[in-house]
Length: 349
Length: 286
Image (cartoon, rainbow over all chains, first blue to last red; front, side, top):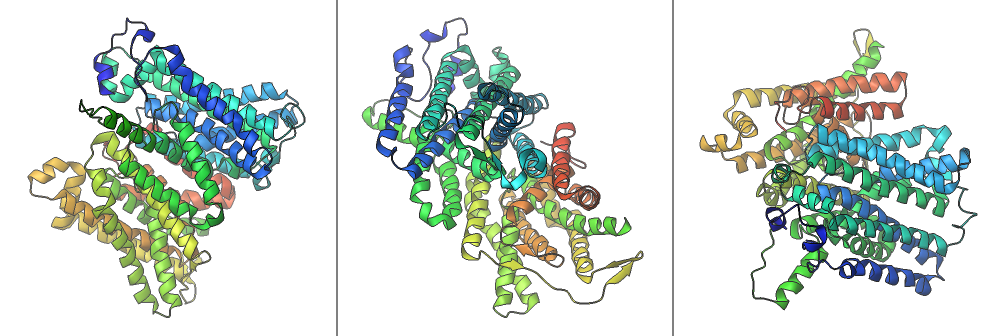
């Protein structure tokens, strides 16, 4: 990936240059978006197989929700290296805002969803702006966003008038309309994830994607070649947070019930981090692979809830120690290397 | 009011001790030990289990301290070696994520095996009158241990050659190496020390209120807040911040409410990072 920055020529239109993502470098639109279509078709067929089982659909809906979170987090962390430890809080901000706005103020659900996404975007953008303008490193960005997460969680518990605290909030709006039954919510969330993937792919292929890769590889070099590092970081923060907030809000309406633990740090952020690390940080389909793998793992571990935490911890350690690029890309790279053993395809980082 | 402030002081000294362990490890190797609270609970659980098995309290406490220290040492010699091989941001990120994983493993294991265990050391004796406030013996003993340990740490870092070696590595790793200090050895030592300090906090805390098996996350977050406000890498900063935040904590909990208090503490950490990333007594090193 490091070669991309050195050979960058900003004048060329983006489509004529190779797209340095997972997979073969190609400018073809079809080849760029085909993986998303494949994922969409495969995922759309799942209810045919599992639609009868309420518990299976519940599980799958959870997996799709997390895929949406992970894509958003991937845009922030994977593209620009900002460690946002507040995915749950941003989703919760969206979820509670949308639920309260539509249930209490009678705002139409679609409008409430948009407001929720916008709110998350503003807060995420603000956090990102603080991190960038004070040039906080990865550690301080992590601590500030973690502090925001925990403070938000406490706020949810404390503002009982609005949120009903631990008891949780029943979300009526939306359940009687187009989001009524069990299968349609799945398609609503799936459509959201697919839209996110398309946006992410379009970003990767655009000037913005080049800027992201440049500043991730070498921030100073990127700055010197004229990339406005601060602007692109905040942009990633805004966009990713909007994705997370909107997903959290949509889930609130499809599920019909939210509580602080729906969006708690331990429930959301930890899993999002593990899923992205497994699927491959920065890659397009990494979030999908990661969330599918861990949703399956969760189902498999369902009977052994007690030591799920140990397994998650061990997975984090093994993943970051052994596969810094993610398991899926590592396997992919291995296959590539076996296929053509000619050139020494050394992959740093 | 006086009683509240005194309670805050007792709590603050424990906060300080909690922050010191975290701040030292970060200052030395750039590893933000997110398993700090879990190490503390691990030590406390060893004490509780030893005491359940009929071991005398002092012996049990020593075993608990040694166990946490040993885990710290083990972590340094194994997992963290991979972290130290890296440089810059990627070292910081890897260290943070690995210790997060370790935190889950320790907590998961303890909660799985001993779900209802908790440590409560009962210190007998009548309340002692201090400034017209009756203080419990447990609080006084906990504070005395915290002050004593803090003083011992200051003496160690200012006066002994080994302590100076530790400080030299914090200030400038390469320079220290040139002067014949072995950073790897110093790091191992400090990780073990930090484990012992963490366990000591959990044990002294149990003299005033029970420490349940799942207290790790709260302790880690407190340690993080204290270390950040004091300035990552600064021992005296951690103690100063600990005492300040301890008093803020009890005053705010007493007059406003507990949930606001948590937000106040978290806000203190966030504001410190934004306005003065080096903390109260930090050295301007990020």
